[in-house]
Length: 170
Ligand SMILES: [Fe+2]
Ligand SMILES: [Fe+2]
Image (cartoon, rainbow, N blue to C red; front, side, top):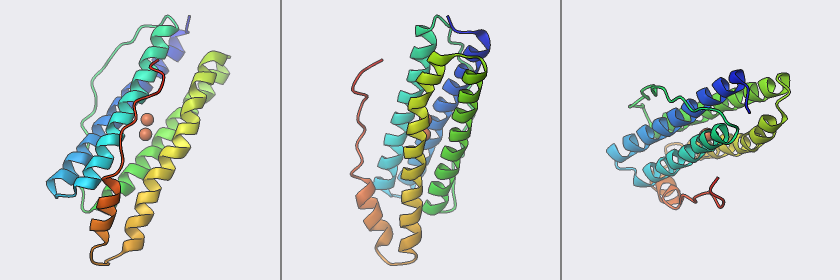
């Protein structure tokens, strides 16, 4: 059975993952509003991935005999000054989430909760990918500069992203 302190920390991460999903869905809606359908698609897929992350925490807490207490989710930003600003925000957000995951690992180690530490390692690896994929788009937009058609080209590329449901449903 999981200790209360760890359960509380994991529950707050579950909330943070739901917020991430909410934030990316808001970014997706913003891109829809400026007719960048490919950008909107990329963010929509990202929002779906964050729901998968949230459910991983949910299922883990339940599996360890803990109880999930859901709380309110903060409202996300709804407007940005440019597509670049959106992706810079996403990149910053992922760096923040990496910090949250690292703090959870620190707690699991301090509590000698090896199972939770092991569970969290998936997220440690995932965050490397998450930061890299957001930064990749930031760099692409910067590289494009003011080149005409550049945004359209990136939009076409981002339209290709598809959501892949997890292979093993936890
Ligand atoms: Fe996440
Ligand atoms: Fe993420």
